[in-house]
Amino acid sequence: MDQIAAIKAFQTVVTAGGFSAAAKILQVSHTVVSRQVTQLEALLGTQLLNRTTRRFALTEAGQTYHEYSTRILEQLEEAALAVTRHQVQPVGVLRINAPMSFGLQELAHWLPAFIAAYPKVSVDLVCNDRFVDLIEEGFDVGLRLAYALPDSTLITKSLAGCEEWWVASPAYLKAHGTPLVPADLARHNCLVYSLAQKSSQPSFTGPDGRTHTVAIAGSLQANSGIALRAAALSGTGIAASPVFLVHEDVKRGDLVRVLADFEQQPLTLHVQYPQNRHLSPKVRAFVDFAANQYREPRW
Image 1 (tube, rainbow, N blue to C red):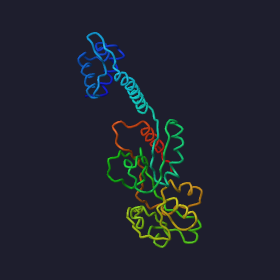
Image 2 (image 1 turned 180 degrees about the vertical axis):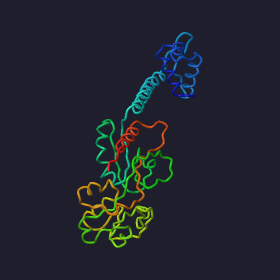
Image 3 (image 1 turned 30 degrees about the horizontal axis):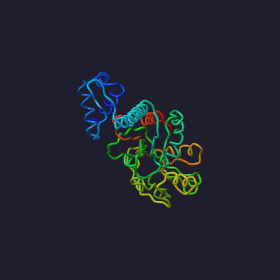
Image 4 (image 1 turned 120 degrees about the horizontal axis):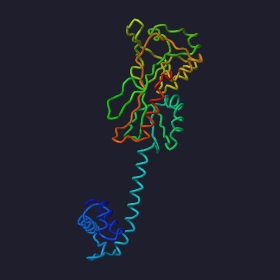
């Protein structure tokens, strides 16, 4: 038995004043309406209507059930309308996960514009540098910076490439010299991002197409690009940093880019979100907004 359909049949009989009138409103037969009400009474274990050949009357139990079921159907209708509104316009809490340095240094610049564009959406942003399972931890969307992403059931869209620049302060280079080829890094204090794959053995492609791999070491390794940038600014050593993190420092002259003629595999900025047959408007709005931010190179 479809209990909701049976409740609607019972309610319609009461409000329409009879089984025949209810059947006409519901566009079913008199027999169907009668059977649904009888099944509802059997489920509840009580009689809701006293029937005669020409009229009916609510029993005391029927009156009570009518009052409660009226509220239930009203709440179901309100719930349906609320969900419909969610599917029409971006609304509700949007939970975003992003890498720490990207979230603080890059996402923070354009996220306020997204919030202003969609005032009915509130954002819960969580930044960290550990692996986060979006589905298990209840995130709507994630931003990822990676050379490659593992296979998953998530929908993944690539937004932009992101070079890594080797940078050092003018003071450090004045004191220790400027590396001219990747092999020179072996003689420098290199600041290492501990979460990167093969961070202590970076590979470069030279102008002649040859691959150069060098073993590096230094006095600081950290799981935070922001910490490495700060160390490079202070003159501690040379760091490999995503361009979004240091391009303004290089523009101002606070950091100097070295080995610019030697290419490395770039990172890619991705946006990920769980598969859903009905993608919520708030997620769709964010994905489209993020894609538009990186339609033209930002760095």
